[in-house]
Length: 205
Image (cartoon, rainbow, N blue to C red):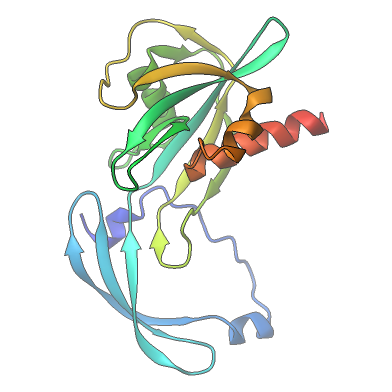
């Protein structure tokens, strides 16, 4: 996968017209070269110049875009969100995460979100997804576009076809989320963004 293909699904910068002060503080990129490439990760070196004129090669990592979905239901007057209790071998930790996964080549983020819901949970979305935000979790050195959605209508249609994702699925009350975060049981960045959005909008409503 090329450096350009790695950025599939990445949102527009949205910078618009820059002021002179912004232009003066912008890092300049004169080119870059890949060092290592496969379908999961590309490591490159960029020829950059900082605003003070210092010029050197800076590492840059490209990861595929991902979609994350907060599946929400209300039962007995209580909002709950479906979460996976799973092990992550790289940091070697267990934590709760929302449903999500990588976009396939050329796939629309919302379509990827719907696909991941079915594969990982056996549920089907019954209403259009609510788009929350597109964000970069490690913006200093890594580009890894994340697309966050809320699914407020789902129904069970079968069993998960993806068997390697989670030890178990749980409907977690939203009232318990802050406690789980404080206890270090939610570490995933996309999960945190979606859950904190749900809590903030519920309080404002």
